[in-house]
Every structure is written in structure tokens, then in C-alpha cells.
Length: 93
Image (cartoon, rainbow, N blue to C red):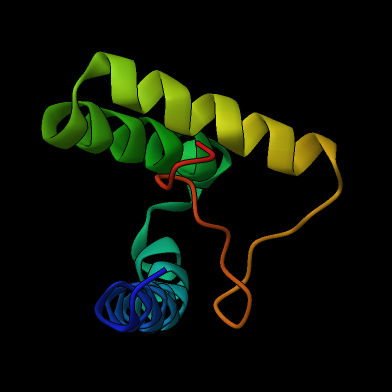
């Protein structure tokens, strides 16, 4: 693998980590601002919004591959964190 490609991959992982940090800070704030009677549906709504956003950006085929990869990751017991994100859109997705 070339040096430029490795640098791009490191940048992408760093950007993913930073984005996850921002979202991890903001999601609890949004949850706290959500009316109590809607909080039970919060996670499902968040997931649906995320999936619809990915479909809009990547298309249905790529999104289904990403979600399949995510299912594999979850089934294997890996928990993606901002310190150790899981690449879902790489060649192994």
C-alpha cells in the first residue's frame, strides 16, 4: 500500500473518531431535550434517520452492504467506539 493511501486512511479514521466524539457529546443533549413521552422511541428514530441519510448519500446497495457489515461486527461482539471505530465502508464492507 502506498504512503499517500496510508495517509488518506489515517486521515479518514481520525475524521471518523472526531465525528463520533462530536456526536457522542451532542446526542445526550438532544435526548435530554426530547419530550419524555417520545424518549422510548429515540434510539429507533435515530437509527432510522441515520439509515435514511446513508441511503440518500450512498444508495441502497452500498447501504445494505454497510448494514450487513455492521450486523457482522455486532454479532462478533465488537463495540465500535470513538477510540476504536469500525470501518464499515471499506473494501471488507
